[in-house]
Image 1 (spheres, one colour):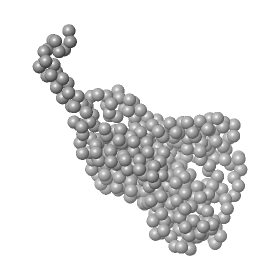
Image 2 (cartoon, helix red, strand yellow; image 1 turned 135 degrees about the horizontal axis):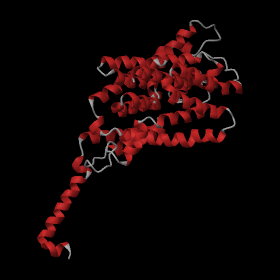
Image 3 (cartoon, rainbow, N blue to C red; image 1 turned 90 degrees about the vertical axis):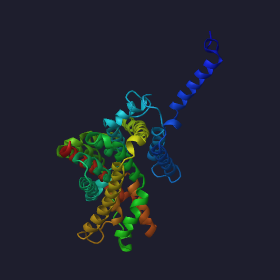
Image 4 (cartoon, rainbow, N blue to C red; image 1 turned 120 degrees about the vertical axis):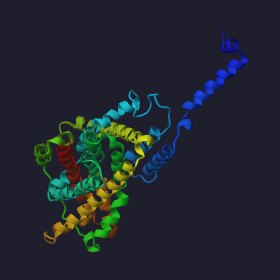
Length: 392
């Protein structure tokens, strides 16, 4: 017996209309809010910047698409949203919430990083340390705006321009703010070529921008192998709480430099880091669900992130100018590499080089700028360990 014969024509029409109303009730059109539209538009902007402008496309394209995924309106309880227990997105998001992905990305970063520029001129490490001032400036600013100490610490790490570190620290100190902190950190990493050059030009003279630095010395293989081992012991004894990031960073670098673990190094620097970057991008983007993300606190976090990044760039450049007061002629450092003390590798170093070439087309600063740039990676991880030790 079919529905038509059981209910009659009128009953069938009532049944179909009821089903149609229920279907419409479950569509995105019935559940959409203005916040969803705003976040979808922001996601489209991220994708545009990643593809058209090539601003960190490996980050902005997955995050932008994730924003669209996370802001498709749906009826609650279907187990499809990133904040609904049992949904696929929620399961993948565990790697962000529990800090699994960042150490694996640091393993890949270590396997891709050449510390030779820093080892050949150790004083460049000081620039990477100076740039971390932005982290503590944002921490103080967040406290002044009423954030709790643990939340302020998680927000402050945005100043290091290190997305994985920001995710790791916020997962430990302020999980509720992770979406805003992660998106802010990755956004400013992508905007390095836009934010930093005006600050660099403002703080330097034309003469300073054309300073030529001595070619870095050749670093021996023994130095390259010894550095990750000694670096881990030294840093981890000072800040054991940074061990998940520092341990994986230095381990990845040892795999690269020892010369006998090429297969492991290639897996770490390709497959592992690429998979984790994809998962972080799509889930962090999806975590910007409008109903939980679009708040006044998120706007404050973005503002503090911008301020901390600007302060980090200021202090990096000014610290080089300060160092030059004590260096003899011929040993001076080009202040344009001061911006690369932040952890955005290698984009910050490329910015140093590109701005330098504007004033002297034969003065290549990339190799020199990589010194403070990789020091910034270690510095941001150490800073995260310090904040975690004090605030956890």
